[in-house]
Length: 152
Length: 151
Image 1 (cartoon, each protein chain N blue to C red):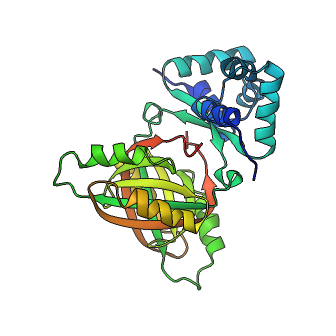
Image 2: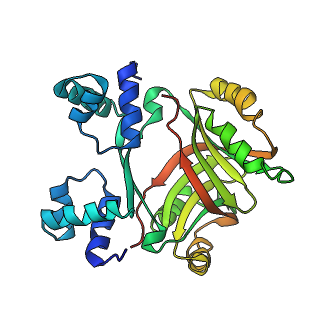
């Protein structure tokens, strides 16, 4: 699908502030509300906008620990990626699964209530995942930036 | 910290799947009146548990074919100010995420680029010139999946 400047303006505003009302979004993008909603509907239909998701603040639910676990897998087994990812999906505390080209093969984002809980998840659910060759942990201290914005 | 019941959990799951669902539709799905469903959503928002929305887009369709995660180590800790680094990195438009971390690296960054040569430009001109930047490791994102989490 072709994206023109109006689409881009709408997307820029929407990505910068997804909570905006349809009216406010149209006004900021300099189009009528009818145009805005027609354009957004079209971009959603055509798959440029894939969806809108509520963000859950896990710290408010008592999950104070966030860890980024980086794995290197034993790639001598061709099923390593599929089996590792399938098993990781069964761990409820895993909130993101990403695969990479580089030194790291897979990254899991893991949340836990506290260090004791994290230790338990790590020993019982993470170390038991299949085909792990190496693990490195990055403990999250603070989020400085988190935005979906693209330099459109 | 707020205690959740089963309907709260069902609401959170449904809204993280699709945040555009109305309170009326949520209520119908889980056997609540529209006002009762609305009050629950409002309570979850007021408690900060529902913390806004995330729009998922097809980055490739918009011309951003490459996403790279960087691990960055500061060269001379103590001597560089973290604030200087953070202020400079926040101003880079291609940077979508900056996490301050403990471990092998000091910061994790997520960067979007049009293609690999665009990424190289960002890396050389913007990242390698950040105040205090030391070792940099890059991993190109191949796939990404968000999970519902422990609700």
